[in-house]
Image 1 (cartoon, rainbow, N blue to C red):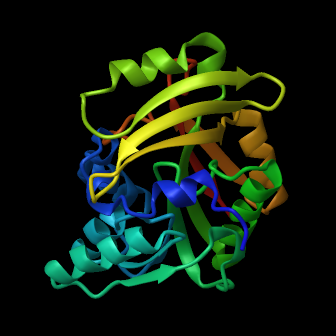
Image 2 (cartoon, one colour; image 1 turned 180 degrees about the vertical axis):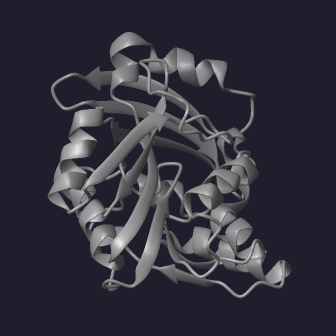
Length: 255
């Protein structure tokens, strides 16, 4: 059996702790933005890629939307199902690899927020497989909304300083070892405590993307309108022009 990747180990037993992380606190505002992008059309079929513990899917279903959530982590999917059940909601949460989705022309929209799979993969090709797989799952006329790491940020700023300033003493801590300008990958050491109280140290690497790369990747997949903005947790907006100070970018692709 192949060795587990860091992102698989990370989410093995991290459902409850994940929901306590600071970056999961913007769900309501983010769903307000998504609703606007969906023109409040409750008939849309939405795919939530790398849905984690289901926070966006659950909130959107509460608001009357039809959402299917997929994630690679058994523990995250289990937690999502438990949360939905507690709220009395029926949601399809499916254990699946975003690179090999079995859907074809099924969804009107897809969301992939908070680094839902992309850009955690260990090669650029694998990250591209996620975009390709999601694109295949979408109907001919559709919208794909996702966030990803902004490659302009580490050129002008310190990743460590960013994580330190956002560290509230709880959850995972990140220490960037090297940011490689040739690959735009940040190699970092992540320390965390899982849901059973076990301490873990993971050797991670994440891919940062610059806007023209994202635009080109999506164009090759048939998206003809691509907008990229700065992504502020809980406050996504088309008014936020992407800058070198944005840690993440918000991407909206339309077919």
